[in-house]
Image 1 (cartoon, rainbow, N blue to C red):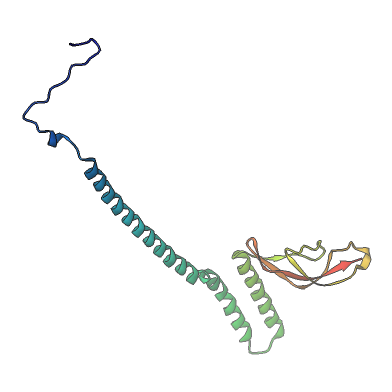
Image 2: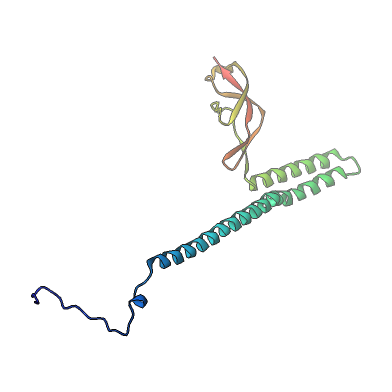
Length: 171
């Protein structure tokens, strides 16, 4: 009895065994597990290698980070040595040499990203300044204004290298 909705059943030739056609899913999963374990080991080893490479590069960068600054300061050292080697005690030349050396040193620091913080006459800002004292405001100035700079402060790029030490006016 063959209904219209029934599909004809395909017969399997007798010379093909059923065992050959059946794929063992357990064996496939075991192979996949072995493959994934190898991949996991490879990835773990790769992560260890990346960490070691990063540590070596970081150590090298830290070791040689100041090299550019040191190279740029060497001419300043040379100029100071020249200024100190003036034999005839000519104070004008000595002062001129020291001033030139100071100017060169400041330029070198600016090129490296060190900038002086301007504070005199500015409103006191505790993020850049350190108040040493507060005195009554002379000349009727507003309270909280920097009257005097005791020690200059410097920024290194966008970070404070040293805060400005100041005297601030008060009412």
